[in-house]
Amino acid sequence: MTDTFEPSLLGDEHIAAGAPGYDVCGVQIADLDAVAAAEMIVACAAVGTSLQVHLCNAYTLSLVDRDDVMRKALLAADLNLADGTPVAWMSRGTHRNGPVRGPGLVGAVATVGLGVARHYLWGGKDGVAGGMADGLRAAVPGVDIVGIDTPPFRMPTDEDLFELAGRVRASGANILWIGLGTPRQDYVVHRLAPLLDIPIVPVGAAFDFWSGAVAEAPAFLHGSGFEWVYRLSREPRRLWRRYLIGNPRFLVSAWRHRSA
View (tube, rainbow, N blue to C red):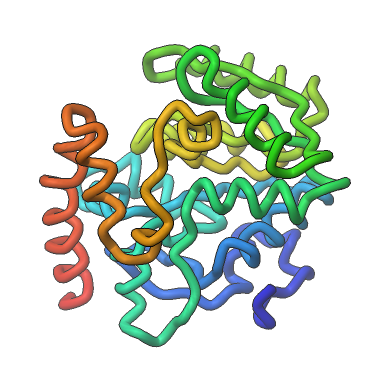
C-alpha cells in the first residue's frame, strides 16, 4: 500500500484523489502498482462503496480525443490505472509504480481479498468465465466466486445491464469483473456504476488468459513495452487495428496534450 492512500477517502466521490498520479492524454492515471490498487479495490468492496475502475492502455487513451463517451467515462472514473508500459512511461520518470496488467490485478485482488471479496465474473465467450473461475480457484484456494455470466455478443442494452445488476446484487457479490474488450467494457463500467455500490473493474483479455483460452505473453516481455508484439502475432486479424493504428494515435494524442 502506498503511504499516500487514506482510508478516509472511501466516502469521497473520487477515491483515487488519495493516490499520487500523472496526466496522460488529459486523463489522470493513478501511480499505483497492482497490490496497492488491489488493496484499494478490496477496501471499497468491504464497505460497499462504488468504484469505477479503468485499466488504460495505449489504445484506450488513443480514443480520448475522438470518442466523447470514452472521454466522459475516463474523466468520471474513480481509479484509472496504467495498463501497459507505454502509459506508465508517460509519468516522465517522476513516478515509479505500474504498469498494472489485468491478469495480475485479478490475481492480486483475489489474494488480498480472501475472506472479504466475493467475485462476479461477466465476460468472454461461452465457457470463458467458467474457465477463469477454475483458474482462479486453482491459483488462489479459497477465493469466493459467487457468479459466472456470459455477456451478449453485442453492445449491452440498458435492459441487459439492469438485469445484470439485479443478478449481481442477488449473488451477494461485492466486486464485478467485466471482460468485453475496449472500448465496450469501459462504456459499460460508466453505465453500470449508478446501479451498483461495488467496485466494477474491466479487465478484458484477463478472462482469456486466466481461462487458458489465449496464451499470455512470456514473462520476460512483461514490463518491456513489447507485449503487444506477442499479442499481435497471436491474433493479428483481431488486434492489428488496435496496435498498428491505435499506438501511433496514442503517441500523437499524448504529445498534443503534453504540449498544450
